[in-house]
Image (cartoon, rainbow, N blue to C red; front, top):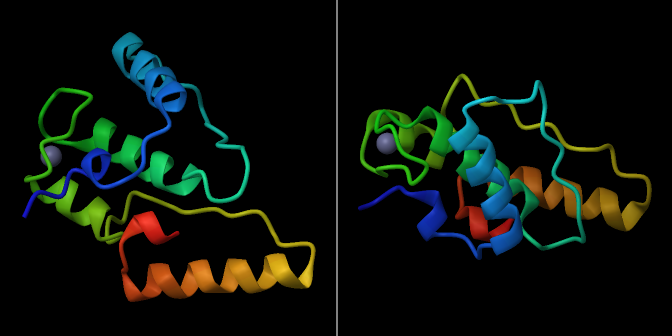
Length: 112
Ligand SMILES: [Zn+2]
């Protein structure tokens, strides 16, 4: 099995290009904020980018085979912290709790 997240998410090309540009410059900001409409894959892109910069292979396209790629794919990397905004409405709270359940169950990131 290949654990390359970029091959397992629905890619927003504009976001991917921006992230690839940051990677290529090799100058990282202290933080990146992924914003946008619900369901466009903000979390998936953030985690895929984390895989890109942590993969043992020196390339934006992660190998999907090394231990770091596997750990990040399975959300088991001790170096990756997921931070979500606090939900303000009950429906957002329900969605937030479902996302947390999915992460805990280690389901496919595309479902987040
Ligand atoms: Zn890798």
